[in-house]
Image 1 (cartoon, rainbow, N blue to C red):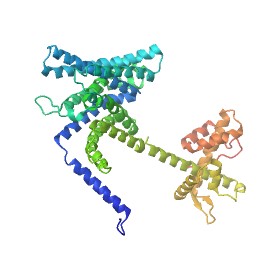
Image 2 (cartoon, rainbow, N blue to C red; image 1 turned 135 degrees about the vertical axis):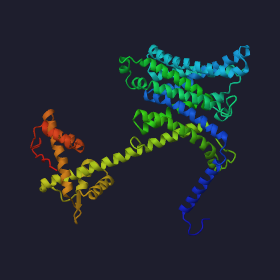
Image 3 (tube, rainbow, N blue to C red; image 1 turned 180 degrees about the vertical axis):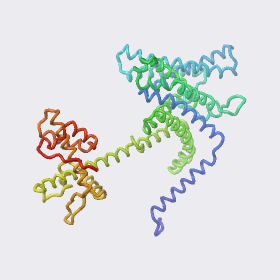
Image 4 (tube, rainbow, N blue to C red; image 1 turned 90 degrees about the vertical axis):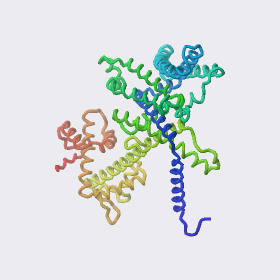
Length: 486
């Protein structure tokens, strides 16, 4: 029973305080293993983010999906080849892991270039679009990899879950012989440094090949070679990430950070830096949420035995959450910012219409209606909703563009009259310009001018006046107001 005088907001604040305390209490058990897992995850995500950014910029995002799937048979065959060499006595058990890494990366390069070439070959031979050819190639090659796993599953221990979804928690326990460095940190850290070095060395070539392959070719830059090189590097990166995030979830680390960065900036260097930053944040925050979120949620739902989740999966979920945050909150491309911009633009246009109508009433006071207010008349003529019109009137009143009489009518202030004069001037200059250059009936000129008058600034007005040789009348015989000198 709620105690007398208690407010619901007090209970909400208390619940939030308990959840925050529980969150930090769960994190208090952070160990060196968690640091190894978070570090491995961060380096894996960062190594994937660099080639992934170029894939997104080149509009080849689905090629990353294809490579993450088609690399599977290469991984399986490299593993089987290393095991076969060991069973034949050519290499020892200690040498097998080293040879396996070499076989994996060689196979990755072959698979990356081969997938890109095979996709183009299928596209040309079958006259298919790029999406269809990608679907044919990567599903067939991925199925081949799964078949190879099943054929040898009795003789060779290949963990299907590890290959498909990754087991980063177990991988972080495997350290480099003679050191305490986790193998994923060393492998993915090396891949990240290689990718970063290649990007720095070939930044100009990558940029030209991404945005204008024709220009790159004309300048002697092999755009096609750059493409195949990017595919090879991406495949190598994907293979290195298999033990941590698997072949399924790696596509999220390739594409989502770059897509998030593009929501936040349009400058290439900033996009690349943000891609790496978002990837690292997704990894670390993903592991943090793995340790805290499942227990906090499921304990309240009656499932106390669920204490954590897979870090690899939570990384992708976190990356998706960051993308959604950017999608809605991005200052320029976010949904909310676009809605705010549209609202402000709608307010401005509705306010301009009110100012323009009041100015025209002052020109010809005899036509001013007495049975309807100006905002209602503007709303009726242009289909503007009452709430938007109300916001526009408030904006005009706050800006001292209009004042309200005791009778409720709006009249122009001196500031509003100057703004309305410029608006009507832009409208009539545009009508005169359209009448001069296009064979249009007079009744077709007003609607076009009504749409563009809100965006014609003083500079465009001056250019129109010069082009039209300073006309005094518009095509309807109405005087064009003179520009007020500051």
